[in-house]
Amino acid sequence: MSFVMSIDAGTGSVRVVIFDNKGNQCGVAQEEWEHVAEAFVKDSMSFDYIANWGLICRCIKKAMLDAKVEANEIKAVTASSMREGIILYDKFGHEIWGVANVDARAFKEVKYLREKFPDLEEEFYRESGQTFALSALPRLLWLKNNQPEIYERVDKISMISDWILLKLSGVIATEPSNSGTTGIFNLKSRDWSPTQATKVGLKDNIFPKVYEPSTIIGKVTKRASMQTGLSEETAVVIGGGDVQLGTVGIGAVNEGDIAILGGSFWQQVVNIKSDVNPPMDMSIRVNPHIIKNLSQAEGITFFSGLVVRWFRDAFCDMEKIEAKKKGVDVYSILEKKAKDIPVGSYGIVPIFSDIMRYKKWYHASPSFINLSLDPNICNRASMFRSLEENACIVSSINLDNISKFSNTNSDTIIFAGGASKGKLWSQILADVTGKSIKIPVVKEATALGGAILSTVAIGVYDSIDEAIKNMVKWDREIKPNMQNHKEYNKIKDRWQEIYKSQLELVDRGLTKPMWKAPAI
Image (cartoon, rainbow, N blue to C red; front, side, top):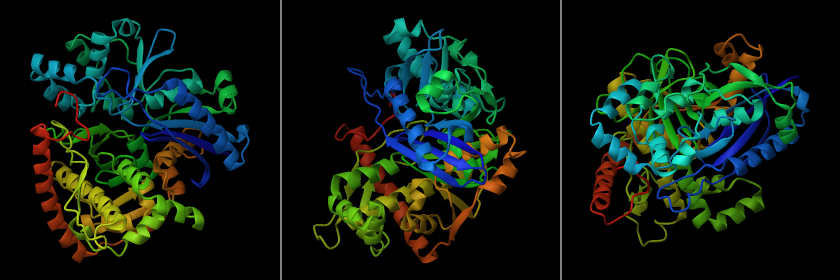
């Protein structure tokens, strides 16, 4: 039996997962990490490539031990990562600067670009599907303005997933699905658009070669073998962005397929043809898919998984103790307690992520609205349920907005990621959207997507479609309660009105936004 390994560098943690050729998860290791602010740099979120490489190496070794496999049995390794996060290199291929996905330090540069070139953002958006909000261009401009000695040394740029593969293979390369999130990219050609950099006065010769996902770019180097325990004969395979790979891992590879990936952030994606133009109002993001000739219209729900984790750690010590005694996950205890809370969680309104407003993207101050002083109504169970409901409500509104411009409206959603483990959360998603929810067996969809690419790369399967047929398995399908759906439609409307009022408090400077894009 041979195996493949996927390394998934998410926003909140890194996971290493080992699969066999049938898609069975054989070993896993995970460690949480944080992306800290750079000293004296407002709204920064640096990526510590030195410390984080150490975490990745440790997870690789732990996953191999967990799977009880020898190094020579792992035939291929690939990587995915949070989108937008970038690493810069000097001419020797050494890292010199890196930021994680929602680094917002470049707010002055975004403002400058919008004022200096008033039509440029819309022009670039039509080509790339991205706005300046998380684009690499303002970040590069920030570096040029604030740390010119580093900027002058920049020879190449890559995504964090590409950086992992560089550490393994010694080769700097990239692929469309993740590099497309830099905004310096063309959706139709699936290649860099260096003229975008030229137009704003930046280097236009720092972009590495673009390979289609599933391409072998080399083998594990001797140095990487010593650091990770992997064999020097293991093939290193180009991977992709975490969301796009996740949709491969759940079989969402056809035009019109809808998927929700519930992780630290929640992404709602709909597959569209690559020649479909992004919406005129710039409200929705459009990214290259792993699959040629397809793009993905995407809504993003900020911090859904991280908010639940915060609630768990801040308020649920008793449930943690209970879970430890019973040998179960703490979230299963919380869901059990929340199951009998009625639809709407007694009117509790969580204010965390807003719906996708890509052109002008910011969020209200995080809070709970409409709490009760009755402990039988307002307690950990009802507040926890309200958070699960809220993630589904925001996702539903994002899907409604995608449907308006793309004319796609499937009656089924594929739901994966850590959140899909929650039986209550899955039922709430069905009830809120009014759609059937299909849950795959393997919840680590992004990692499985990488495994699918790897098996194709090394010739186990002839195509991604064939690999999916053999590796993607289904756990259950959940039908919506249409009476609950009617209630949630009312709650959706009320939530949007309340959230609008909360945004006005931010606009007046009375509250602080949970997050805002640069220059907002």
